[in-house]
Structures are given as structure tokens and as C-alpha cells.
Length: 207
Image (cartoon, rainbow, N blue to C red; front, top):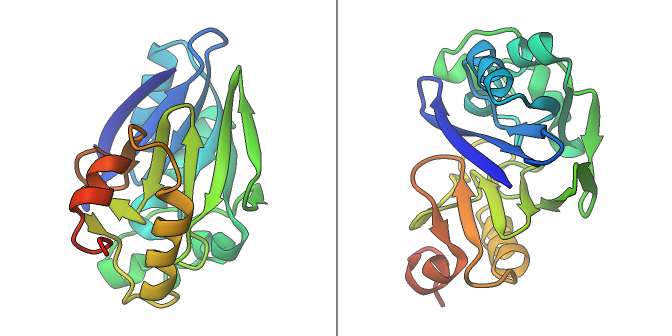
């Protein structure tokens, strides 16, 4: 499995390209900016972009959607509970943080437990609400992409509209901490980590 990270946008969101190296099918997670450049990176690798997946509908994770979709024709996906955020400057917080870009609707919405085929890979959608009502994490192989749910030593903010601290902690403990401890965590901001490291050292979720 191919995985690469690029920090995008003024809020330095982590955008990931993942691909099946045999079939060259790829997915991009959270293109928060630089959509044309991300498309170029996929082309350089010889990848066919099949999915654009938003882990949630905040502006710093979606502002590259339109340019990337225009360049590749990939299917744009987000959880149903965050679908409306993708076209709203207010719900996406784009207006709040002063970001301007073309906002486009998803091609379809995702549900908890759904699996997206990507060559021989399977991308499992895990509903992890709390940062937003429609926040998701994505499990594939020994990797877990957690968006703004779980960070290295921290957790996502819950003080924005639709946030819930209780739901976020519950999602981390019951949905993410059930994965093997050597699972590598790829968060929406900052450096990566592992499930073991967060179980043992994250001050927000330790007993």
C-alpha cells in the first residue's frame, strides 16, 4: 500500500494519498487545498484517482475538493451527517476563518461500516462523531486515518457547532481503541502516532 502525506491550506491540514500499488487505484483523504497540485502528484505516480474522501466537512479539509474533482473526475464522498457542510460557507466554517474557494456537494454520502474497494484494498468507514456530527475515520490494512478525531497526544475540538466532547471521547475509546495497538494513526493535523501510544499517553483519553 502506498501512503504519502502533504500539508495543505493555511491551517496545515494533512492530506493523504493512498493507493493500491498493483492496480494504481488511489484515494485522496482531506484535500484542504492545493487540489491541482494533488492531482499532479497522482498523475506523476501513474495513479487513477477513484475517491476523494472528506473525514468531515470543515473548510480546512475540503477547500481543494472542487479543483481536485475537476482535474480527475473522482467521486467525492463524505458522511451523510456532514453532507450539507460541503456547500455552506457557514457550516463549513469557511466564513469564520476567512477561507474562500469553490464549494461543491458530494457525489454521494457514506455510512458507518461501509467498505470502499480500492484495488485489493478495502477502506472501512468508521463513524467517529464529536468534532462534527458526521466525522469519520478510515481503516485500511494496518493504517487508521482519524481526521480531527484523534491526534498525536491530543483530540479534536468540540466547541464548534455540532461538536460533542462526550461523543468524541466515546468514539475514540469504543471505535478506535479497539484496533490493534501497533495500528499506525494518520491524523488530520500534526505528526502520526499509534494506537498504543495514544492509549498510554494521550492525556485526554486516559482513564
